[in-house]
Length: 618
Image 1 (cartoon, rainbow, N blue to C red):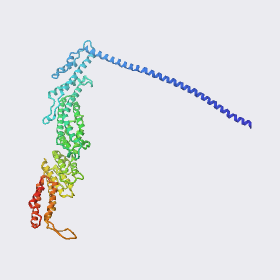
Image 2 (image 1 turned 120 degrees about the horizontal axis):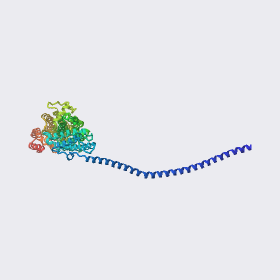
Image 3 (image 1 turned 30 degrees about the vertical axis):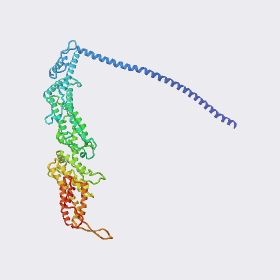
Image 4 (image 1 turned 90 degrees about the vertical axis):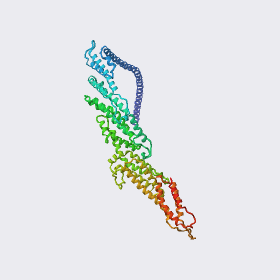
């Protein structure tokens, strides 16, 4: 038993020793491996440093080698060109000195003949290779052809004009002699195009130069008119303003010279189109007419398209748009470009220029202008009669002042308004005028009547339900009189004037009746007998009231009201006479009935008459 235990104890100890020996061996191997790794890392780091130094040394050499290669290539190219030019200088062409001088603008025909001689000359130069001779002649011809292109450009130049000076006649254009010379030069260059590459084609270069010069002339000539249009549009649309803008920012019809601008544009473009078309008439290059006109028209078309949103902000829903300016544009564009821009579209039909932008602007402006009619009626309804918490006054209100200003300014556009109203249809501008009969004098007369009726109804709503009927009636009389005076100074067509006059006359009659109704309370004491008044419930005694005294007290209050809220001069005389006719007979009768022993002396009828006249004195 003991021997077995000893063997069992010895065996684990041996296994432990073996494991320890293996661990020591592994540890030794790991140390050796770490040493090897450290040495390898040191060696590799040394290689990296050497490679970096080597790269730093080789890179400048590589760059220098590349530079030397480029220099060598350039030197070889220069040598080749020098050899070619030396060979060219060794080749004598008889007309070369003359061709290098350039053509005489007064007589270019000799110059073209010299070019043709060089082209046709097939005699080889003595001692010179044939290829060198051909190359030399080609270079001379190209140089001379470019000088002809410069001459075409010189012929086509014109000083900018002020197109407004020619609207009544016709726009100036290149003379027939000048066009003939340009056509001859272009035709000659066309004969040389077969001998030239596409990049060196002086024929096409001449057409582009011609187009560039004429485009510059067209743009420069239109610049002053374009600037005037933009400046006028900015003046009435850039500054902030209360709404409606048309009532607060005055725009004089024609202030933006749309009519002159568009007419001049069309006339100048038509003149250029006719002149350029004559250069292509009967020629084999007629297919290039469209591209040449495109190069001429494109700058001015692009300029106009860029400015349209600035001139007409409503195209992009700009709130600062001035509607009367838009009406001016619509009228001018219909006259100059056609109702559907057919003249403008025809001008650009065979070119690559887009006519869409201006055509769309004209059509959109016409549609917007139709919306102006209900908009203006709504604007009148929202004009405040007075500021909030302000006491009722009888002066001329903003409703009448701004409303009649809108109507007055609209009269400058009666012709285009009639056209727009016709396309809109009768009564489509309002939803609450079904009870008003149409007029035989046309839609413009109907709209003017409805616009004035809207002003009148807004004034009536402003004082409806007022607790001061006398001041309210004075307010209406003053405003209607102001409107009537302003209406008489307008240049409305007869039918519109008659319709508006009827609206105001009806309003004046109603306001006058309301005003005279307020006098019933003043004259009522004159129509009653003296009455007994009980002054105490405990001690009954009576006092006889004097109707004349009561009337006089009320008349003094009425006088104070009229001094605070006077009538405007245009109606005072007729209203005063009506009041005198109502008051004086009753006062004279009441004064005659008054007992002689009444005690207190009352004003005579002359005093009352003077008092009433003073009440209405301006």
